[in-house]
Length: 113
Length: 110
Image 1 (cartoon, each protein chain N blue to C red):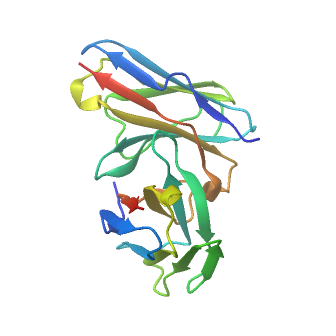
Image 2: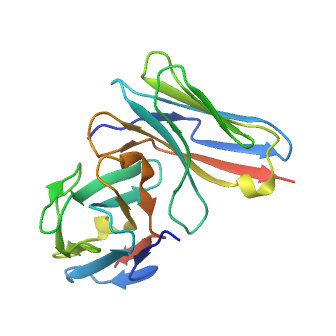
């Protein structure tokens, strides 16, 4: 069964903290994505990766960085968390050339206080 | 970044009613997709459309790829309580990236 897991379902951090969100997929997918979901704005792409050590900026990369050292793992890093980064973060993965079959993790609801 | 206009934003309906929602874009797409997100979960793919004019069904769900390639529609017939959730459209044009709509939140009352 297809599986994308995210390290935490809920996270509370303080302003200025460095935050790591981890995503792991067990489907040998080449592409992995990080989205942010906010009410009324849908899903917005932060970063994506199409191979190990490769990354590309999405629509809203400011304040975020990513790391992909292994094919199955894609990390989202908030270098210095701010309150406007309070949101639901969703990770997804897919085979290359099959973007329509994006498999999503359950999401991490991050609150920055 | 580009976003799709999805409407309505929310719907409150009675069990058994039919539901319609749509998505429009200023750009053309090669693929239209519809996802459903249950409360507390990630989105799950419902229907994928690959050709202008295509009409595809998945149980009580029917989706259409607009003839202009700039819009898509999703209909749910005879709604049931487990249809509750957020429905997202997404479009794709020649890349591995998807552009998502803003979502339609559906509530079904018994």
